[in-house]
Image 1 (cartoon, helix red, strand yellow):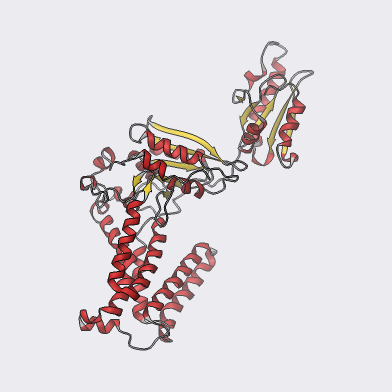
Image 2 (tube, rainbow, N blue to C red):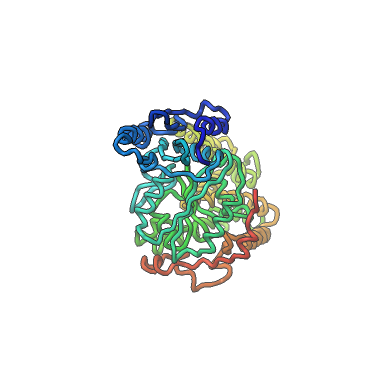
Length: 483
């Protein structure tokens, strides 16, 4: 689009907005008969940048024109990007990203980045505490996040591809990979899945997560992390890091089941090499199966355990509900308190948690609402779920725990075995970007276990990461499709 009638072009751009007065117009005379029209959205434009990058250069051009009559005005807009063949829709999108548009007579429109986004400064990670190592975290600014990532991963092989998703309210995102480590077909698959997202308002990063995870349910196939050092290590292992504008969490993909038992701090301490991960697998088992095991024992196998233990499991006084109902009720009550603690104002969290603790412990047992064994079992259950570091597994743990309790009440250990088998079969059918979710356990490849249950040496973890067997056909079949 070449500007022949500046006022007509400005009117067309303004009409593309629901409220034309959202667009501010600045007229800057550059010749006796010509002027430049600058269009911008005032709320998202830095006025200092506007004057430094546009107003001052055009003013200097007007003065220099007297001495250099053949000088072109575009040479003075050194920070600008001409838009040949630009459409009104394209200009509108760029203005929503904080660009100012300069309309010059008989010239192509020029875009100049004058964006001003108010974001929080770099601080400590919000989703996890840092045991050792760097304590800076990602922010809501895409530029800041890419700066942090390049700081932690200073390699010329780092590849960053940006794209926009969304029709009316678009968001920029960056697909970050490592040339030579990341499978190019894997990068292509991520790009295709994101391009298949057709949404009018891209306002939450979960839309990108759903697109990358593809078909499947219950278990997460991507991982969110706000630590740039963790993102750098993921790149070294051949993963893809997706940064979404407005989100302080990077999306790491593909993410397999064993990835959720790893933590960045494992690579910063000797305990993380041998002890941390096996314990997390054990904690996952206890948090998921322990309540159902007690239900199955009390219902069907009291005679098969020592008498002293059996006497402790049998209720010594009547309560309002059977043991199974008590377990489910206390689990739901604790879940209510935990969910509320995440959303309540900081000054009320202590009061709510204190009241909840009193309700389900001392008072509830004194009035025979719950048996003390119930409180102990659920307490152990929730305490062991805390070391399962990634919150993505908390939802599967909760739903499988409830299902196993109900099945154990009616069918005992046989029912638990059947449900567990069904869950493992479901997990074996899941794919994370075309990679088997239980790999390298299913399919069984013990030679690929060197960074799963235990952490290898740091040089081996970085130089010889566990390979990700990407299968293009399975990845395409696992897509959600255009939505």
